[in-house]
Every structure is written in structure tokens, then in C-alpha cells.
Image 1: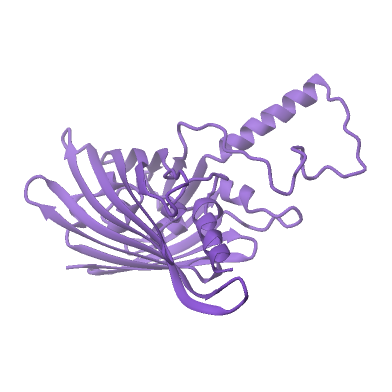
Image 2 (image 1 turned 90 degrees about the horizontal axis):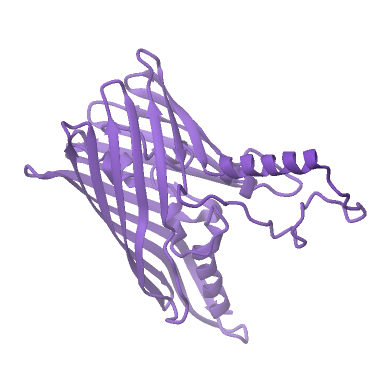
Length: 350
């Protein structure tokens, strides 16, 4: 039973946290680690500013405005899984800006039992990522390049896995508050697998994002296109074992479609697949020190919808409040029909 539970945890790390039905490992890397990212649909990789929490989504957002900031974020994820993220930024002489970040994903403590139901030892399960970030401006500061080196450690009882990954991003921003970011994320290798027999891959992706704040407008709009190099993000629901729509009744016969029906069905399918790449939302700037945030993640909504319950999955919102030295953020995310996630973040500037 103990081995079965640990196997379930490994499956959780490779599949259950996935938003695209994949089988890659270390899916905790896809979970937003900061309150600001969680409130913005899980991704804020194209927003320029002085908030050090932005660098977890994209190292190319690291800039001198974040110097001597320290941030801590806590997330109560689905089913009482706890996530922690801490980071600090410092200047590296005249070469650029550096930062260090630590992310921990704690699944909790478990009671171990043997195959006869006799209690054995207790054990823990957790994932960790230690990030070293560096960024510098080029071309008169209109462009910023950044890189993050990740050391990834996973341990479920005596089963351990280890890997390294790199995030590399380029960001363009101007004085008109227009930002464009291109990011290659989680590119690397798994050096050691849990049992030594399975082949594990990292959840890599390429993202393209935009954000824009119209002049004198009290809001900022953003849009992120995820999985730039992978078009098909749709998959057959486990509920649908026939490969057809799960809405088809058992006593309903399948009729030959007309050309128009085939065209409209195909067009609707392609539009649905396109929207699965998109995360969009806004930050409402009520004042210089108080912001409201709301976003929508279409793919999360589609993949977390139950056959008989649609719910508001994919919707997230939150707020940010800051003073001269402190900043406080909160986010609420609707991850699944019965699963809500809350994230809080505190930032301090020395």
C-alpha cells in the first residue's frame, strides 16, 4: 500500500498537475508561485514593472527597479497542498541584475502501511526548485534579456529525482507602457529518475506575451499565448472512451454530416484549440498603490469542467496593495469545480 501511494504521488507530479493532459515530470513548475501570477490566470510573463515577483514567470523582467527587494509567497493549493516561494534581487556590479529564488511544493506527511495493513514508517513528499536569475538591458534599455538556471529536486519517501532546466527570455518595453516578451521555459534534462527505469521529460514551453497600458487609462491589458511551438492541446476526455463527444447519448445514432456541418465542426474545433493557448486579463489601477486583478484561463476551464458541472473554472482575481517599502498581494483561483486556491504574497524593499 505504501508503494502504491508513492506511485500515486509520482503520477500526480507527472500528470495531475498538467494543464494539457501531458505526461511530463515536475508539473509543479507550471503552478503559479506568486500571488500576482495566480490572480492573472497563472501567468504574468509580459508585464514590466518594479515588482520582484514578476521574475518567477520570466527572468527577462528582472531589472534594476527590483534591487534589494525580498518577497515571500504562500499558496494553499488544491487538497491542502502547500506551496512556498521566496526570492531576493541584488545588483551584480556593472554587469546586470541578479536574483535568487526558492520554490517548494509540499504534499504533506503520510502514514506508511505494508501489504498486510500493518503500519510502517511515516514519510513526506515534496518538490523543490532553486533558481538563479540574471538579466541585463541591451539596445538603449528597450530590450532586456534574462536567464534563470533551475536546480529541481523531487523526493517522495525514498524515491528521488533530480534535474536542471533553463528559462531564457527577451523583453521589449517602451515609455508608452507597451511590453512584448518571448520566453523559452523549462529547457533541460532529468539526470536522475525516481526508480531509474522511467523516462522523464520537463514541462517545457515557449510563450509569447503582450501587455499595454493606454495613456492616462486606469488599467493595463495583457495576453499570453502559451505553447507557441505546439498547436494541438486538445485531448480525449477520460470520460469519453469512444473517442466521440461525451455528450452523445447511448441511444443516439450517428448521422452522416453535410459538408457545412463538417466545416463548422472543424472550425469550432480549431477555434477551441486556439483558445486553449490563450490567457488574458487586466490590472485595474484604482490608485498608484492599489490594483485589482482579474484574468481568465480558457484551457484550465475546459480541462477542469465536469460532464455535468461547468462552474467558473479558469477564473482568477486578486488585488495588490503597496506602500513605500511593503507590498501585499492576494489571489483567488478557481482551479476545479470543488478546488479553490488562495495565494498571498508579501514584498519588502530595503
